[in-house]
Image (cartoon, rainbow, N blue to C red; front, top):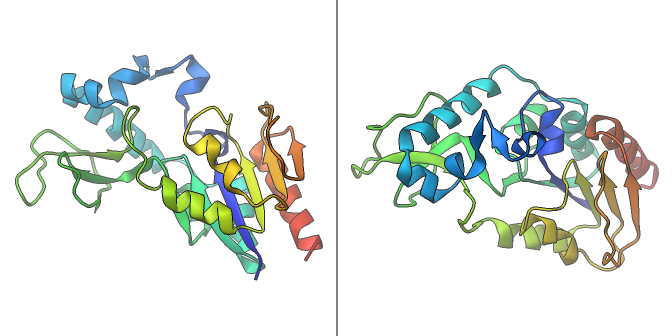
Length: 228
């Protein structure tokens, strides 16, 4: 069975109603992104950071997967599909994708401030919510300035793929944006985004669909099935 790696970004979730900080000039709910998405911000005002993610977590229960999520999930009928997402929501899983790697963490998980294993968490998180060792829990989100633990697994997935789909991402956030460089030279790349970045250095055969994820993803999925 042919392997597809799908790299998804904020544009996929935005169509379901999830806000992205880039749409507001680097602001989230009126906060500078470094106030709510950095270790320094958490150290300075942990209550603010926790409430920010509490709001994001609550919003997840009010939104649904869109046509892009569903089209990606349905590819599993004909392909081995690995989703590598920069998004921290669970919309891919809810759409039916079974192999999802979250590069930047997950809203529905928390971990110790000491970096211990993730814990499932679907309620609000507060100061005083502790790990079993007595340490404070924090959102299981990869903040700016922190390493991306899953990046090597993502590189391996892309390197083994027969097709690469990049959808809903500006290709501006590293190291995720560099993953395309790990695709084998003959692997076709499909890039779906209303405002696609210039992929000048890409040596692969590629096709750009300058459209929303929910419009472009079903088109690419049908092309791949036709080529089987």
